Length: 304
View 1: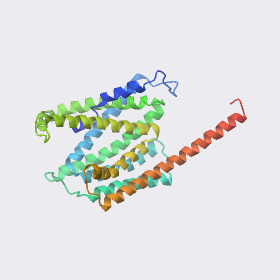
View 2 (view 1 turned 135 degrees about the vertical axis):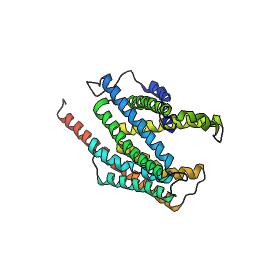
View 3 (view 1 turned 90 degrees about the vertical axis):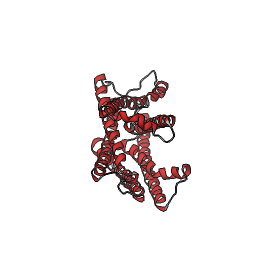
View 4 (view 1 turned 135 degrees about the horizontal axis):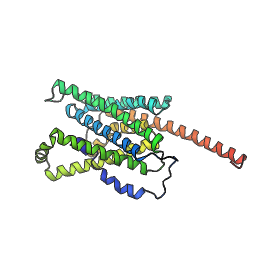
């Protein structure tokens, strides 16, 4: 169920898709991809998303929250490798510094809590959960790089519609795969008992699932949108920042304790994030200067 919830709320995205869809499609490609290629891409990515969601859910089932967070912090390092080989990501000192600092920030936050094996979890299940979480981090990073490659080499459209379509169609596939797995595994039989045993009642159980599902879709659109606008590495960097910012939200909402380690982790996350933003500012400034120089040369050599 935790796997299904992560993609099941895709119908809500049809509302913004209807609102932002324009009559004219500003495609930069004279040869748009065929329906068969699009179906193959969405089916492949959707199936990978379903597998990745299941790996994350399984890892969280058998690991403590701190250990799980620590393992998931490795996804930024995985993404750096995949971005270099798949997306030809150029690594400057600032970007390398940002990746290292953000990874250390998440790791520091996770180490702060007790990372002992949860009660009732055997060593074999604990090891299986660790492998699942590590595999999920690597697969998630690969998925982001493949999405960026799809935007750049296949879709080649400059509208936000393509982001919503990517999220909707891959979520449809992922949801179908997850639901089939839910029934094939027989876990659906335990859902009525799980609902009846929910502390706040059946209505709260359903509302929790609905709220979680909608929140997942909102988050996913943001992730895919950042891949489309900037890069997969930047999208992953933003996700890693949120891990360190979570204790601050817990302090405000749940009145959680804010110790020195959490403050240091937060400062490191801000440092890494600002470093990455500064590198993007430098790149954008250089690109703007090149555009201005090109425009000036065209005016001098008119017509251009």
